[in-house]
Amino acid sequence: MNILNDYTVSLSTIAIVPNCHPQYQTMIIDLEGVFYFSDKPGSIISRSCLTYGASYDGRRDAAIYLANYIQKTPILISEADGIIAIPTHSPDHDDCTWIILHHIKEIKPTTKSCCQIKFHNYSDLEVKSSSLTIRQQIQKAAVIYSIFCTKQKISYSFDR
Image 1 (cartoon, rainbow, N blue to C red):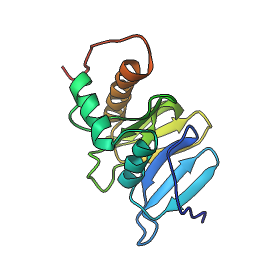
Image 2 (image 1 turned 180 degrees about the vertical axis):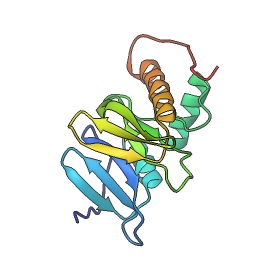
Image 3 (image 1 turned 135 degrees about the vertical axis):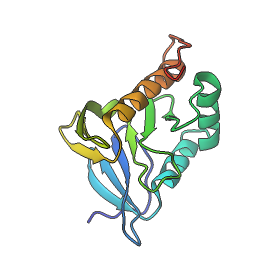
């Protein structure tokens, strides 16, 4: 088990997964390997936002204001690097896994309420969320990316 004392989401981060363990509450899937960390996934996302210059609440508020994504809001962690974290559930939910947008290659349903996410590095992860939900989350994240990380500004909301 690879244990970390500190972690910031970066371009090599693939997913931040809740881990049912009394001490190591998060499993981090990274291009460098799989690591375990004592903080909850939401704390890692929040601290990473601060590291890149904005609070989690500020990032969330901006996404809600500009794209009207109130529920399961994708979070722009780094505008310069285009790092966007997609929650599979409400961030307060125990099963909420955070997937980093630019690593997603393909979504495949496994059951009605679960799907497998395949990544560009040929790894995969099964999440307790339908493939439809994950696809909607990817669409939301793509809009967030367009608003904050490109010069092209669109004002379309998939929720309307």
